[in-house]
Length: 256
Image 1 (cartoon, rainbow, N blue to C red):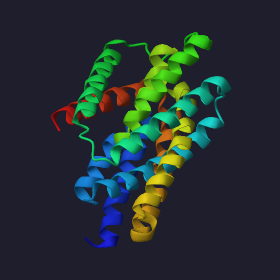
Image 2: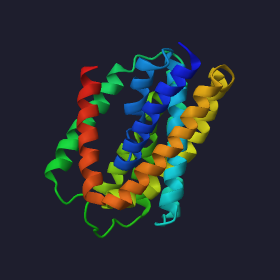
Image 3: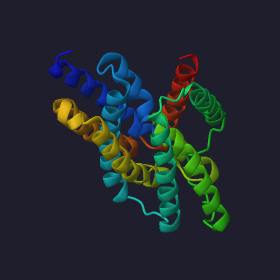
Image 4: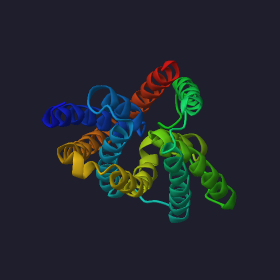
């Protein structure tokens, strides 16, 4: 296909996906990657890398906005980041060997549907401010284990930021928007390393420079729009969209 056509189609997909993902708190790659693979870039690794470029710049834009409004617990942030990098490195290594990811996707889809249904009925979860769980040694250990596991899946097919958001909402008792100050910067840093490695191995900037530039610009734009919409609409609407995204993507992923 013509390079300009590919870049335009991928750009439209990237804006839509990053607006939804940055607003809902994750699952961007689960929306963007299959659409790019289907309508723009036919090669699996090229599509995955293009998707990661868009996601990287979305998380950078979102992190910059959230950092002006909230503060993080440094110990928790560093724990999530270090073990997230380890998990992502394992997943990225695995994907190069053409692993059949269907089992992982089915587990992921079941979790998304289950969490979506649970949050639909748990009306106050993630919406109203509650007393947060204290960050002690046990919480840090649980966070490390969770971040490692979920980021192995992130390395394989991406889009697992939603689970980190849910970790904060359900386990640490934050609101959806409060959780973003961790989700977005953690994945911004993780994506820097993963995207750099993928870009190097696929040489996407050398072979498809227009596509790579388009994904970066559209990721920034989508991240800015989605994050500002969060603060405009509030936790109730963020939760509604997150629940919808989880159920729709969960069903779509499960049925293939």
